[in-house]
Image (cartoon, rainbow, N blue to C red; front, top):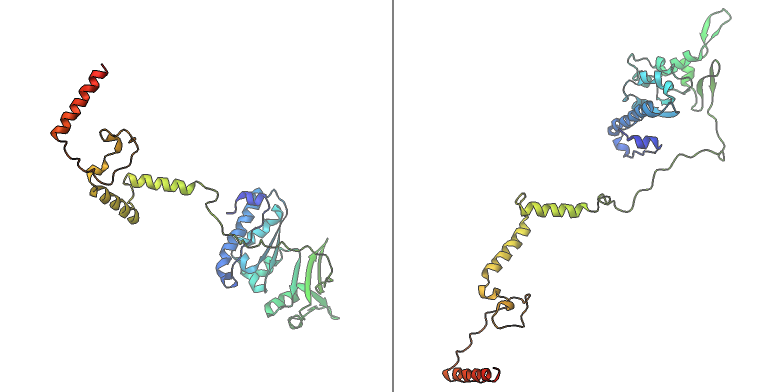
Length: 291
């Protein structure tokens, strides 16, 4: 279903597909057209709407014959193209293309290629009276089958019905015409589908880290190997190397952020008895001076 906002803004919708996929795309195109009809009947407020269909697409619309009977009530004008009268027969439940064509006030019948359509055109054009007072067809089906391509039958209404044989109007080359809208140019810059949610990747990463930390999802193999290497390195270290300089006795220069020492400090030699006596004598002299 096409969003209502697109319909209210009178936007243009382009459906592009390869010519080889025409049979597969007919169902999608029919669904889009049907949704437009439903939207116009619901929100259109009887505004004019021009609907151009071919018989192949119209055959896929549900209840197309019934829709034609009520289209004018919603301001919908329908232009239907068909290759023959047989194509119109497929649009009605009773296989009566002549009955369906009678619902169109304006008709153009080009030179046919089958006898059934030629017979209908001959009947639609009418009859003439002979000198004996008998009704005879004005044109035979054989004469209509021999029409050139630029000859057609026009059926129209203006106060009363008119049925005439005519030719297509050849407009001059400089005749001003309104050109159809061009489709939008193809985008050259790749689309970024997460551009409208810039925080989504960061949120996803944080959520994954939280789930892995709580064991809700397994840790990826690459991250698990990194954790094992860090654990093995920490176990292989000497406990003595984890002491900080601030915890060493007598080292006042070491701060709380001193890094781990690479190796244990070398064991100092024990002082001799003479050195201990000299040290004790120096301490006694210092105490006597500063009392």
